[in-house]
Amino acid sequence: MTTKCLRWGICGAGKISNDFCSAMTTLPDGEHEIVAVAARKQESAKDFGDKFGAKIAYGSYEALSKDPNVDIVYIGTIHINHMELSMMMLNAGKHVLCEKPMALNLRQVNSVLQLAKQKNLFFMEATWSRFFPIYEKIKAEIASGSLGDVELVTAKFAIPIKDVPRIKEKALGGGCMLDIGIYTVQLACMVFDEMPEKIVAEGVLNEQGVDEGACIILKYKGGRMANLAYSSRTCVIQCAASIHGTKANIEIPDRFWCPEKAILPTGVITNEVPEGRHAYNFSNSGGMRYEADHARRAILEGKLECAGMPHRHSEMVMTISDEVRKQLGVVYDVD
Image (tube, one colour):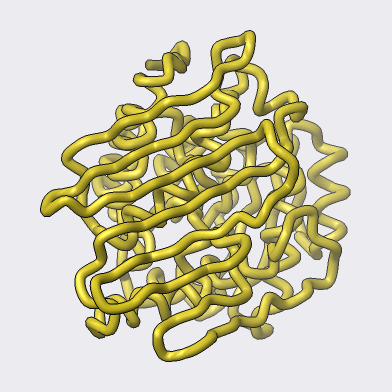
């Protein structure tokens, strides 16, 4: 990266890549540029590139990896390809922002993170929640001591997505742990910042043996706990989270993974979720701008990871996810 403008290559031309690129249009001019797009089909890449002003469209991901004008690659493909594509881009000398989950299991996570360190390149799992201004204020509130000792984290994520083919099929890395359950786990990891001493999970599997939902208990040292639940079987409900301390609580009343409001001991806080130039496919996707901006700042400062979602948290989240899947009986071919 030779200038302060971060030059992006986009890997995948689907819905999540659309939302990421649209969110980036809300950032200041001259800080980010989408220079190339790659998809499995050249026509898809070209249509996507025309939409977002990319100069070049590639019909293969390998071709994108060889583009000398790309500083960083955003990987927004289906997650069964995340490890392979991350390693391809890192081996080609590109920084990487990879959608969550960054891999299917801890072994794959470790392979990617080790390569990033060997190549001296920036890598971050795109857990966008972590970079919302509300999350940053929540962390500051906890650090201030106003909650006292945090004893309990609760989070529920329930949304009717069981009919989405990707979620149902084991061959596509299906199951809801790695799709929506991971958001509940990352919140507990952010608050407690350590591995639990005990993990207990019970859930429901579909006919292909992947999870449709589960309840998870994480027990930490000192008797602290996290009570987490996720489901694709229910109607849309209020997906809330709370952080309970010995002195006070924090409440995120809805969509805790992409919040617009939180209730702190010091009062109600909000953050703006801006509209991009093109329509979003998912709720509050304008918040993806924050992770892109944090990635840029980290790279300009010569850092290899972001404090908001450090490598050890990616390892922590996947370690818990692996154990949850093991207890539920969800096994992928790569396990």
